[in-house]
Image (cartoon, rainbow, N blue to C red; front, side, top):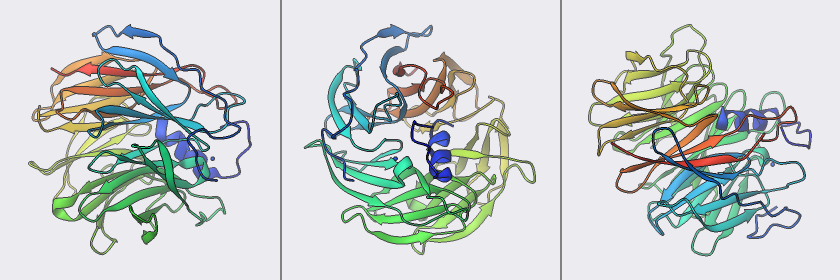
Length: 367
């Protein structure tokens, strides 16, 4: 995974699942962390997307309305480099506007509604951090102490913020998986949700229905009541077939719930969110990240193995565009008005689990 031979199996799996992967308080310039080389290579994809090489080991990307910036999580997965970086990019040019050096490696991202606070999962360290984007510094970090049944630490993967309750939900990769509900102000755990299936991968909030959806490696979608933090239903869209569900999206107008499978069923399931019944499977192949854009009535799906991102009509699922962004599209994000899609692109791992090259960020003008 990294040069240190981690015994934390669950954390390693979490960092693999972040790209389909899961390491002391962070400081703005962490000691013993090599300064990253900020790549500046720009190019256009065959379909005209602006693309820029950025860093080794890119994971999630988010757009902040606070300062009209993109934030990209990086593990700086190179030999001899400790810690990671949060990159601040211009959303138009993808030029670097700022760097936040961290003493842990960064994977999942979530923002508060104002966009001035960033929450980051540190999967290899079994932790989640809170970063003040106004000052560019870490305010707090919560270290999870629970152990999986094999004795390993949990690997936090996805983090989401519930604006109504001001709670963070963090999914832990382990067997069985776990979900933490955390006060976003104090970073104290308010509730834990256990028995969440093998490897909690994706999380998605539906505030109107007081629901949290969770995907896992047992092929389940869990329906969790956010008022009681209890699992109300468990759906298996693939039935008895083996499935590893990864990420989720919801169309709250039609109550269609989308869930991706990257490695087993290699499809996107469309479910009726009212009862979990399968409406259809989208014949798009391996599916990693997924986003719904209600403004344009479009669905975006990243295909890590195919090296592409699909843009679909969200009503009839026609493929409107296919963007070629090899080798491995990973994370998707939209800007404030839903006119541009941002994609992080990873490179394959070396035998020693470093990134084999610079990862990149792409900006797609949406049709």
